[in-house]
Length: 608
Ligand SMILES: *[C@@H]1O[C@H](CO)[C@@H](O)[C@H](O)[C@H]1NC(C)=O
Ligand SMILES: *[C@@H]1O[C@H](CO)[C@@H](O)[C@H](O)[C@H]1NC(C)=O
Image (cartoon, rainbow, N blue to C red; front, top):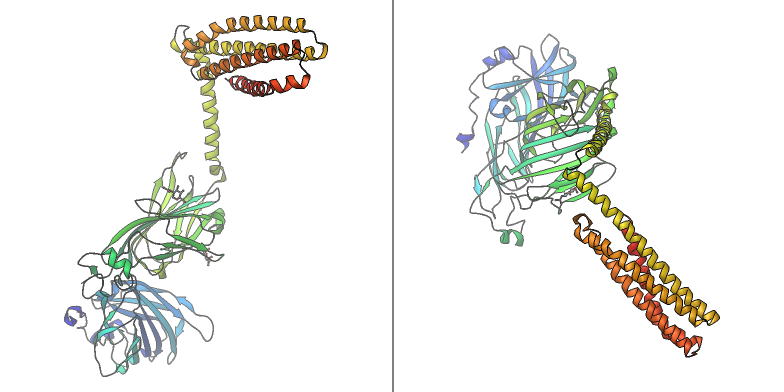
């Protein structure tokens, strides 16, 4: 195994030193800390660099064998002067003359020249991906994941190193490691060294084989769309293709076993991920192909909003899932005024989920329609292009800035800026379009109505219109008739009141006779109107109400007449007032409710 993992590059000799590092720098001390607890490997090197030559030096070179540098996702150099806070020094790839073909160099620009005999302290953080190889490559559900990490025992440097040490920080059990005389395994640390006086590019392989069950969360692709609306909103949509980058699962998956003891029967899998969204994120959703995933949790305070992402199944080695997370952000937190009348969007690059590797990251910034003079500022190189997005109401489309970067680690979640010019008039273009649109619709309606009137009198739409007018007129006449019915009812009621006051039975009977005749007359008048409505398709919606009205009215007439008869007869028999009232009490009640119903129905047919 060691042979397989061994670097191939360390065949060059000290001869290289003279050509690549002409300066007389020496590393008087380097301590290396290799953090192996997640699947992203971080190497922190604390360097003391001394100038032993006669000339001032303004740069320090870092060297990485290609086998490592191809996985180098981020590099950062911190410089601390005295007790002041540290700051970041520019660290860029470089190709020194006579550089060996299988080594990549980076150059650190020193803040001031290093004079003869002086020393500078630097801290270099290098972040590597794809550097932990699962071994074995396939495991069962119940097994722990073991991985192998290979490095150089000595600090790879174009300069001689006087004093050095190496520490591996491990997340758990160690299966095996390369035994050198100077090695100590203390709890979660494996310490090699110290080693004295090593020449430049010294090499000796060191391999660590250890347990690592931390989530190997890999976003094979993350497309993040940031859409600016000058109406106060930034809409972020993140589409993930997520997988487990560790040892592949073999012999299938048993959910029963998993559910019984998820930490034992699924140790290498991961179930939840936490996304840290900006504070004041709102309208957050999380969904996959099936729909919203409601088991996810959202919580937050003034500092941040956290979304717990829980896929529908635990993710084992080699498994994949896709999902989308979306949220809104307040515009004023991210969009600012910039020099030259420009606006600047200042927002973070990368993925809000912690300890995730994004193999392919695409960021699309959708600017408002009409944005011009677009430029982008990032702290690291990205592939940039422009596109256009159309949504409703857009005329020329919205300019889209597209940034692409491979192997994005949390260290690259840095702010980037998109500058653009925007004319406020453009902001009004959409509402103006709405207004113009509504106006045009209005004009079209008027034109249509005029044409409708002007069309031939035999056309079907004209006939329909006439018929509809006929229906309306008929309904009006029907309402009129019912109003008259009610007036007759009122007359009958008042005749009874008169009777109880003056005892004039004859007059009362006369009123009743007249009422009878009026009811008949009205019913006769009503009949043809009803027949017309029944024959007319356009009246179908109103007809049931009118028919109900007829029924209720007929019932009311019957009750009214019965009551009238009862009262008049009682009067003729000289019954007492109390006696009469109790006899008609129930009829009275029924009549009152019928009248209410009739009035309600009349009201409802008034609105056609
Ligand atoms: C999913 O959630 C979003 C935001 O809460 C909501 O607008 C949408 O209607 C939901 N969709 C379904 C299918 O439940
Ligand atoms: C972007 O925002 C961050 C955080 O608020 C701030 O530190 C940084 O200076 C801003 N960058 C620019 C160019 O405005």
